[in-house]
Length: 276
Image 1 (cartoon, rainbow, N blue to C red):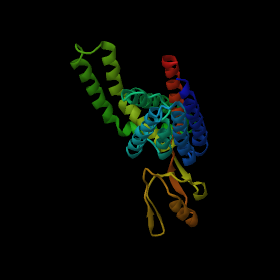
Image 2 (tube, helix red, strand yellow; image 1 turned 45 degrees about the horizontal axis):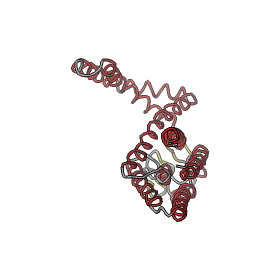
Image 3 (cartoon, rainbow, N blue to C red; image 1 turned 180 degrees about the horizontal axis):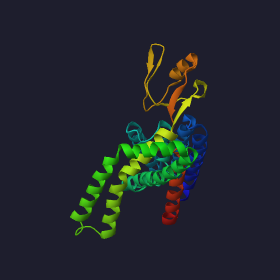
Image 4 (cartoon, rainbow, N blue to C red; image 1 turned 90 degrees about the vertical axis):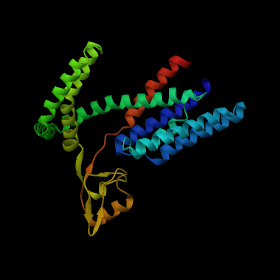
């Protein structure tokens, strides 16, 4: 498996640079994500020629294409921003595929681990956001709790119903845990909404806007409407806003690249213990 060490290294290096960019600028440059794809495929091509094993390149190319498909799926499903989706492309070519089932084992296994890491990372990141915006968060949290108090009644009844109706069929602790989650779901929903409204919306000067920033709401610049959309602001739209000197409300996102780093490190550690 020594031929994969260089692939793991460039994958790790690219993700590390992506983390630095994402944390500092809230975007991941195209040159970084597409360079990763180029380096991965170039290495596989050269090694295939050197070792006379052309399947090494074919498996890698198929892995990249598989992750390109996943990246577009997550982007258009509004799960990933553009930079995160593109970062996924090149990572699809670094894993040691040798059969079709490996695309499930390595490909989907990495994606599952990535989302698991993302959940814990986002939760921890949100706690720091609450710390920095505590009073605004507290006000919005209890406002959301009051406006959705009926959900607690519904969730309590639903949780109790699930618990008692399935008591004889599912393990006690598993069922109890699921029932508690159902009951607490409105609180989790209020938490997420309060984070969004108190910590993730910011009035921004036009000179500080970057391509891909998300508008909080549609805005008129003269007679032209700039609509909010998941792809974010284009450079042409930013130019209009700068020309008009118009400040806008921007919805901030959580820099997700650190979740890639966590997921990749854990996944590579698992591969090392199982394959080397």
